[in-house]
Length: 102
Image 1 (cartoon, rainbow, N blue to C red):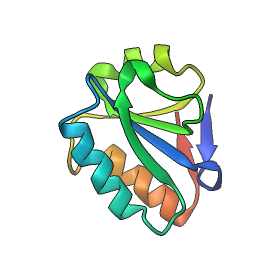
Image 2: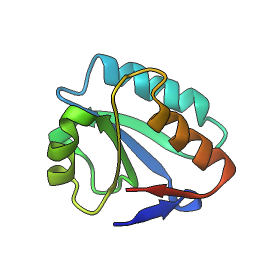
Image 3: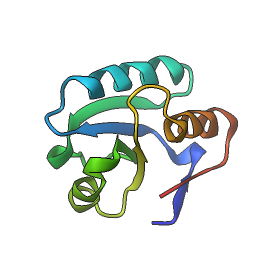
Image 4: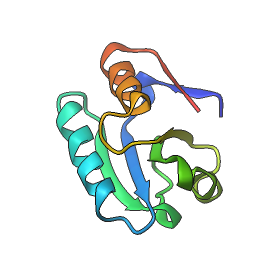
């Protein structure tokens, strides 16, 4: 998948190794930042990404597992849990319009 238009994003999944800890904080932060956008944010273990996810957000170290668990989904990988530029770009694109690249 090359990307997804921001208007087609309805569900973001924050995936991590066990579905707890830092991903919970990131999912909470994304929920707050996107609260008026109509986009839902959930967190799950990387091996349990639901089929209805539009965008998967995960740490770069888990990107290969996320791609295997959710082939064809747009994947945004990051290096740091809070304040990563990739996550900031995702939020800004959803709020301002544009395409989120895979």
